[in-house]
Length: 236
Length: 250
Ligand SMILES: Nc1ncnc2c1ncn2[C@@H]1O[C@H](COP(=O)(O)OP(=O)(O)O)[C@@H](O)[C@H]1O
Ligand SMILES: [Mg+2]
Image (cartoon, rainbow over all chains, first blue to last red; front, side, top):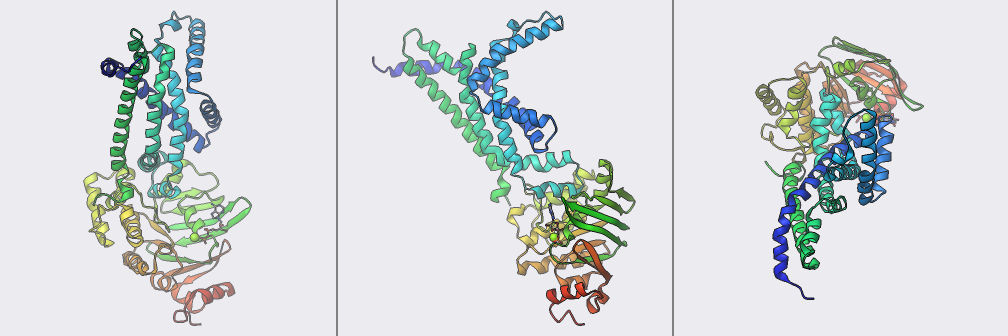
């Protein structure tokens, strides 16, 4: 067998069609994961009874098990739960009506949430206690202090880690293949299945992932410059 | 104007404030002196409810709080009556000097932005920072940061400004500029409680001195009296350690 450079290009063009699916899975899981991360991080930092214990258990369990496991558990567990609930409520809804990509959304959101909980937590802890005290002294409520003073600074210091989470979830989205979702990597396999030029096809997929990752890194760098300019003493 | 009654505060089993009574009249400048660890910072933080007193009563203007069981709302209203200048400045790091001063006006007091901006610029000019409006705290010296901190406190137009050792984190050559600003606003009749180790400054700017040791007020009196003829032995000991002879003549 010989390498066929022309097929790399051919596969590359065909794989472009799968980019939206990959980006959708990544965006949904990171978006939902960020919200889950904020809620669970706040619950742990402010020691909210019950919610705090649930959050801690969730974070250790998810971080202690592979992402593929999350997907499998959601794929096989969620339908049981949906059908039981639907039956109990006398609804006609059945789990087969749920599109497979929906299971990927749910599973990967749970995965991202646990990792991002740690990212958000360390971002919040990086904000000096004096900042929130100054906010209180100025007369702000806790919510105002969090929103106006703590979150912006926490976001700035968490940005590099958030970017890493995003890249991790982008690469992790390839697991959606297991749920028969045709994202970039699955598409690469399909493209090569007729001529068996898997290597060329996977190289094309790798190039696309690399390119997307570089875009994320660039955007992060731009955002970092804006968000954290107060630290490096830009402006003025 | 301000009345503290029987303020007590413990950290675990360590009682840090052992029933503090203090009254401050409108326009008065009160300096709190005392050795390190005597509870001065804790007292200021209790007045602002950054620390929750175990018991006692705090009244500032028309807001009175029973520290045994205050509601969130009462605490919020009480905080609205005072402003704090911190030892470590604690300027909002992600905001410029101007934004730091405007923040409380816009977010807490709902002053229209343009008006808040104008007032804030005036205050920053007053503390000598008219040229640093758009500088971030990281671009300012300690003395400049503390002057922004003072402008931020003034902007709120509080009944009382609490100063917690406003110059003790500063390099010696920067102390003067901050004291000058405090002196200036003291002359304008703003009520202030200042914790300080600057004896000469306290004597000059304060109308009354409160001496604390070990969580209690040991002695208080008019500034002139206090330094000339301290009554308590503990006060004398403290002054002997703290004061150059020029100020301390018994
Ligand atoms: N958050 C805290 N937890 C435990 N102990 C504290 C805390 N803050 C202050 N203390 C203790 O309370 C005492 C008084 O502290 P402080 O009010 O800072 O004194 P001062 O300002 O007069 O130096 C000290 O013994 C200090 O160790
Ligand atoms: Mg202190």
